[in-house]
Image (cartoon, rainbow, N blue to C red; front, side):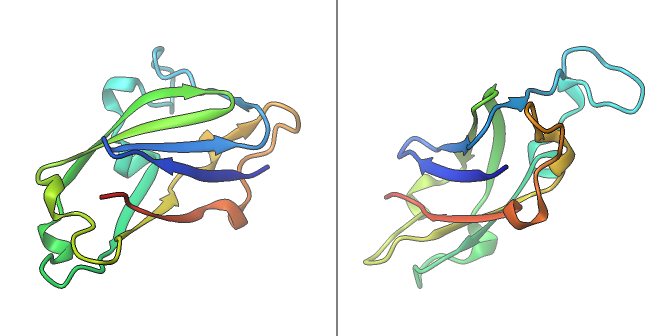
Length: 130
């Protein structure tokens, strides 16, 4: 099983694509040892985001954002990245890089094999559009 960082849209949607169907986590019902959607912190529990900034005028510490899951289906996951100042991103001649680390591979379970996402698929990167 594999996950790809398919696209980052200009309006801040990070689109992950799975090469096989996944069991979509049910966050609506809080069960023992599971997270309810209200307890979920996307950057703590799902994906960790870092930046490779190519702009000399922006510092990594100046880039602030929140993450929100907007759609999770068996073949894809869409996460909204809301920047406090989106004009700081991908300034200049070179686009900045978004680096993603899947924090909890056990949330990404294959419907076919029942196996979680392998460690070889936990780190992804893509250029951020202007």
